[in-house]
Image (cartoon, rainbow, N blue to C red):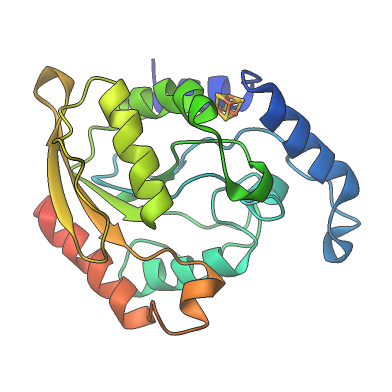
Length: 229
Ligand code: SF4
């Protein structure tokens, strides 16, 4: 199968009752600013280049961001910060990502997540993460990226847990998250991936200067260097 076929399957998934209920109820209530919009309210497929050597991995979609627009990191402050950096470093065709169909294209990079549905309080349960794991594993199998830029400690823990469950050789004890930390992990069938830690692009980090544009650019350029391209 192809990534396109995988994306179509992901979008139809209803395996986690709590998350299905949440993603759909958020779409009913909405946020005042988006009152006139029809929310996506489904799982988010990966977004970006089907031949990407780099993936960006968060944790799960935001209720009024990706869950609204149907595209990862699209339509909120986190995404604004991220896509501006992707444009500066040559991965994105434009510096903003406002809605599906805005013409944005990514080159050499794809976005994905260990959990594809928006969770209450941005916190999926371990069992929801486990249920969603095979989608990510299948995407990594089809894509075989060299590098995963992992945004934030929660995403890092979720990705390592998912890789462990999906048969990857994650070291014990699990490597700790940190901004700039690099860890190579071997996977099934001779695959391997280098995880590159990066503070999350949430306003909590970017409005306070904990993560600056320069720091994010540096991680993105490091990822590109690791691919040898
Ligand atoms: Fe399906 Fe993943 Fe959404 Fe659960 S979180 S319903 S497994 S897509």
